[in-house]
Every structure is written in C-alpha cells, then in structure tokens.
Image (cartoon, rainbow, N blue to C red; front, side, top):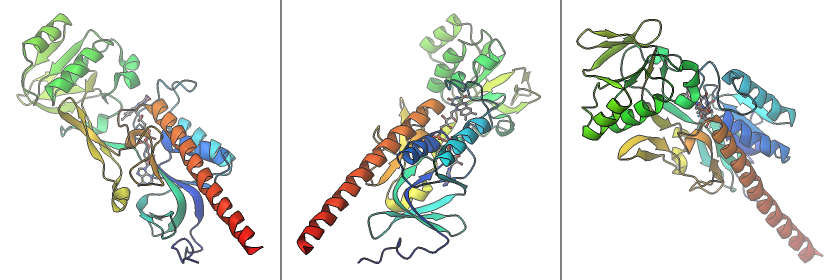
Length: 331
Ligand SMILES: Cc1cc2nc3c(=O)[nH]c(=O)nc-3n(C[C@H](O)[C@H](O)[C@H](O)COP(=O)(O)OP(=O)(O)OC[C@H]3O[C@@H](n4cnc5c(N)ncnc54)[C@H](O)[C@@H]3O)c2cc1C
C-alpha cells in the first residue's frame, strides 16, 4: 500500500472529497451542489469577498438589494445545513498527494487532504494610484454601472481616464444613467476625432489635466493645477488580479486578459465546467472570469460542483470495478 501524505495526515487535519478555496458566490454555490450530492466538503474562506465595500448586491434575482454579508451568510448556512464545513482561513499552497489527491496547506500550518479542489478565490481590484480613491471604493468611487448605476442615477458622474478606449466605453455606458457625465482625461491623452464626436453628441464634457486626488463627502475631483470639480461619483478602471498564488506550485499561473489591446486583468484558464490544466483542480467565478457578476459567479460554481461530482463518480466506479475484479480473482 502506498504511504501517501493523506495517510500520514495529522489528527488536527481532515480528509474531504472536495476542498473549496473561497467562500463567496462561486465557492459557496459549488459547495452547495457538492454537499447535496453527498460529498464531504470543506470551504476555506479568507472573508474578504470582492464586493465587501459595497452596501448592497444588485442584479441578483431573488435577493435583489441584500447586503454582501447577508447573501454569503445565507449561503454558508445552506452549505452547513447539508453537513458541509465552512471555515475562516487562508489557503497558502495546494500540492499533489502521492495517491492522486491534493494536500491543502492553510495559513497557520494545518494541512487537509482533498480528492478534488475547487478554486474560487476571486480577483483583487488594483485601483488607480490617486489619493482619495481607496477609502471611497464601492461607495462614491465605482466601476460597474450594473452594480451601482441605478443608485446614482441622475447624479454628477466623473470618469477617470487611465486608458482612452476603456474610458470611452465607461463614459458612453454611464451616460445611460445620467446626463451629467464628465470625462477627466488625466493620463489617457486626448480623444481622437471619432471619440470627440461621440462625446459631443452625448453631451459628455471633457476636462484636461492630471487628477491629483479625490476629496470631500462624495467624489470631488482635485486637479493637479488646483481646480476642484464637484462630482457625486467618480468611475475608475481597476485592473483585476487573480488571487491564485496558492496554485503556483501546481503550475497554474493566471494569464493576462485583454480588452482590445489593453490588459484589464489576469485569470486562471478553465473550461465552462471549471476544468483547469491540472486534472482534479477546478476553478470558478471571478478567478476564471474576472468580469462575471455575482449571479454568473454562482452559476459557474454550480457547474464546477456538478463536474467535480461527475469526476468523483467516475473514479468511485473505476475503484468499485477494480475491487469487484480483485474479489473475483480471489475466489
Ligand atoms: C465594489 C463592488 C461592487 C460590486 N457590486 C456588485 C453587484 O451589486 N452585483 C453583482 O452582481 N456584482 C457586483 N460586483 C462584482 C462581484 O463582486 C463579483 O461578481 C463576485 O464577487 C465574484 O464572486 P467570486 O465568488 O468569484 O469571488 P469573491 O466574491 O471575490 O470571493 C472570493 C473569496 O475567496 C476568498 N479567498 C481569496 N483568497 C483565498 C485564499 N488563499 N484562501 C481562502 N480564501 C480565499 C476571499 O476572501 C473571498 O471571500 C461588485 C464588485 C465590486 C468591486
């Protein structure tokens, strides 16, 4: 018999069919489908989902306007109600076990064994380096009109241009929610003739000059020349960085994601069922699709959960066939 790391597992650790890394929309949804498929599941969650700064979750059918805490709290309860384990913690590494599974190392040194891994650890928003932005992120500094547009409709909206193509996309989109949109050209150069015509046609003002900071109760924009432009909301482009460092030892490295010729983030490659380049490791949610919203992330987690169960069913069947054949030979 092979002496695998799982066999040597300390009594502090545990063995699970599936360890889910990340316990927000994608991870909890995957975990729910797996516990309902009678799999033993551990969810390890570091507790900082991407939308934590936002007051509410929008465009989530059935729970429209819930707070992120409420939505994920209900999700954790649902997973636990079917016998799943949800723990606060951070996964540091995932390594192959000698017997075909994986050893998952948590911060603090504890190790658990998993037959399969579902990585659902999301992305980190890398905000433009402008003072005043981080503390207003998710409140008056925003990125996504589908998440916040309705709440700030008809307000004074600024767009911070760090790339002209992306800024044009954002300006024209946000114009759907307000007629008062100003494009701060900042570090993005100047619009070309076509862009200038589109901005003019939609009544979008441009302001030249670098932005030095964001100030006040909402999102007043201080220019480097000292001018202060009163705005309720500032829309920014945040680069989305996959939170996948713990997968590096398995050779899973996030790849650049492009919008046109601009890199807007990184993501782990996976097919629609969450299958990655490493057999037994699945991924879902923003980690694989950085611009997916909460409902899409949850749907991807569900797809991956079903794929993992199918994979385990195939392995269980193969083992049963082997055991039956061995028993037949022994007779
Ligand atoms: C400000 C803001 C507001 C938003 N509002 C909306 C909205 O209203 N509606 C909407 O549909 N979408 C909204 N979004 C998008 C939404 O945040 C994402 O769609 C969603 O978070 C993706 O879910 P996920 O489960 O893939 O990732 P996340 O929600 O980011 O969850 C990943 C989880 O993994 C955990 N984690 C990370 N690394 C580790 C590790 N090593 N070990 C253990 N755990 C780890 C994190 O702590 C986190 O809990 C918003 C985004 C932002 C930035």
